[in-house]
Length: 255
Image (tube, rainbow, N blue to C red; front, side, top):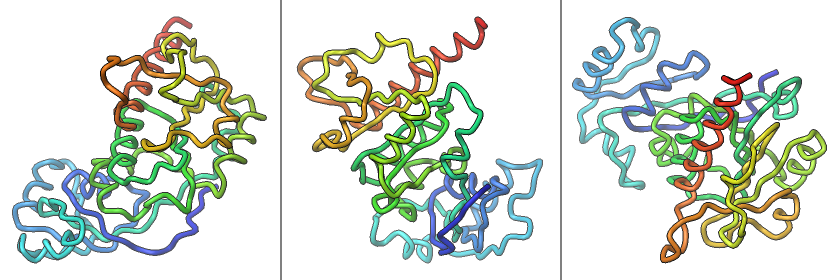
């Protein structure tokens, strides 16, 4: 069962974000605004399929497209699209009869650039989904989509009303929860990473909230140079995603 409670449309910008949206048969695209050069580039990149078939395409100059990025001061690269939200499965339905799932869960992480970069890494390393608080997730942010570089089309985003109750429910369904905390003395690479896992990340300024941290089975860290205070959250997540994916692939190949 797929749901889409939000029927509003919004604009995204950037070559990768727009082209990946065009490739996604589940994504409803209302309009595409292109320069002549970006249209040619789309045809070069997709010679075996007509990505613009049945799409309302409007040609604009670069300066005309600049109005879509005035507030954010982003580079549109000649690509702008008006799209609708994807339908996504309910988390409780998605996990049914599945094993060895890995989710990232974001607690009070609100910066669109960081979230977009984290989503890009998660999709790159086959993470099964991202759990976010619905009220805090910038679901229509041009910056998020551009930072994700097309990865929003390749991963499930589970928007929940309450992070703590979601973690509690998942623990009851045999998920292990790992909170990434710079103050922990347990290196995340020392763990076996078996079964269903949730990687819990807090905001860069304050980390995981105390009332959320209590749901973690383990608090872990990423060992870095002692002279460096911390890593950007998207960099931390990418390191963790890559390591866990490698472990699970080795186990799968050895079974």
